Length: 468
Image (cartoon, rainbow, N blue to C red; front, side, top):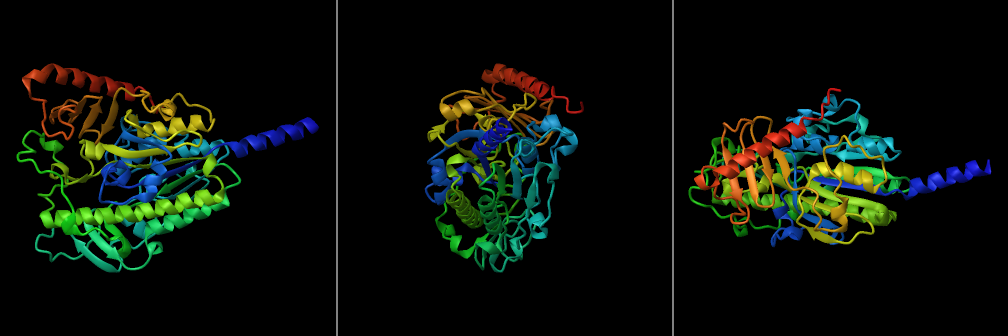
């Protein structure tokens, strides 16, 4: 009996000592808007303080360049072409009884909870309704939504997209709208999300937790309380506009939102950047509240904290706006991982969002799952120069676009047969991706090589037969 009691006590002690995981994800966030990534205008002091104690990755890539496929991918542990999830649905039908990232922790005895958008959830519609979206109930012990007024918020608003004469009213949907909203943070969805996350951290400090906190800003509409609107539109700088920039981009590679089809003149483009920055600052303040709650709980020294976004975002680069593009602004994401006991660093090593699942499982001592398509990047957390990936892979819909890149070359093809066109960029000499070398005779061999590499990557991704 004494041995049994000692064994039980030891097991309880080990369980209590297991690290927590606090996963914080923003929506539609480009790393270039964060001051810790070099932005000199947009202020993000709370994300910066996390970066100051964690590993900040400069070359992290999503696996799908819009919300649904990206989130289904990193939560399931599979690339979009393995699950077939290229839209706004849960991956559950594809993965069967295989555990998602959060579910793996739940199965190991963790309290597993999500607050707001982790799997796909419509913004603004799903936030207005307070609905679950494409959530996966099996992943969570508890789940919480954070309804908010979104574009209907009282305040001063303006529709920027499709409004050249300024007469269009403030509208909903996936539209560039800026609202300087009346009221405090708690009026808005992200304010409610932060408050609930703080409450859950305080309530569950005595047991290992996996807490996923999903902020919806800076996703359109760019709604944030008035106090965050401190960025004068006329002072906003826009990216360089290169004459003929689209001439060598295949038609499928021209983004679905551009300055042209959105009818946004320079004034409205600057207003879009200012509204986006206000939304980022609002989101950053909510991140700060959650980090403060973690400190107050006494669990900061036993909690792995991750901050990222589901994909990047264009803010006028190439005259593109929003996501979906496979250029770096859309495919690359901010990623900060803070692990107790590990040194702060900046890493230029390639990583994928798909890596978060196996990496955190290993760090927390959970059973490994060789089936996962991501890789354990723990070596980079110890040595920021360590190499885990030689290439990274991202997609923009099954038939639209495929991206594969290494340290030098970015290769993009549209359609699995590449009939929609090809882009090839030399990142050493053209880091902003202005000159497509795909039709250059001098680069024909490189194009052929990379086309074969993409075919091999797709074959490897699909080798995991999820029907069994």
